[in-house]
Image 1 (cartoon, rainbow, N blue to C red):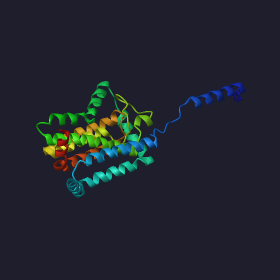
Image 2: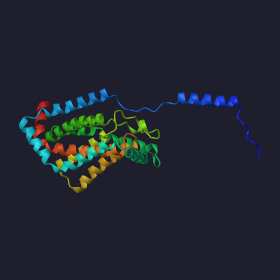
Image 3: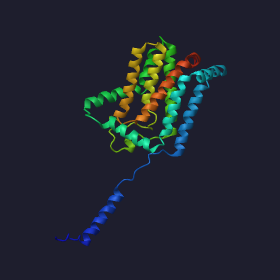
Image 4: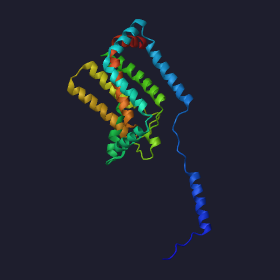
Length: 272
């Protein structure tokens, strides 16, 4: 059996030099974590914004609101689940599962251009513009609902940024080289999904306000669920981001319905 030809020393030296250069050129993985002082500043600013909004209510109305919140048992389960989801971000195995589910919705199947445009556009129903537009439209005919929408969108946006600053979770396209991005790369952090929280807030508030029946209620939440799905399709969020956003939107819509008698008249008087 013929012996394998030995590699000349000069070739081995060249190979070592090439490997050394590749290691130097290859980019090192970034942590994608924001500096701690920046996160603290965002947290303090968002918390101050929420306290500023709450400070407008007289003491007796804040007391009534607090009693209503403590007696509203339907909020306990989503609040507890949202807290567990935020804590689960520290679970390495959970991140692996989250990533697999994300890639399934983000990459699996055919992705024609018309579908990207359709779902990318539909995804923007949760950017808050729909709720603000509806608030402007209802300002004269239904000022109470208009005030609930405007105040709810504003306070929910602050709450979302507060949670994003706490969890500091990077977007999937920053940590996953295989992620497919449809449209632009969304700025900011990933948990929870702001678009999903806004559309579930809108669906919950409209359902509580108009009480349209089961059929319309299913339609409202089906639209909200599709918006949540599109956030994974366009590569902006992991599944747990979407679930967290849905839970937060459900809670915020329920809260907005509870605080209507106390907060909206004050908000409308302040804006006039």
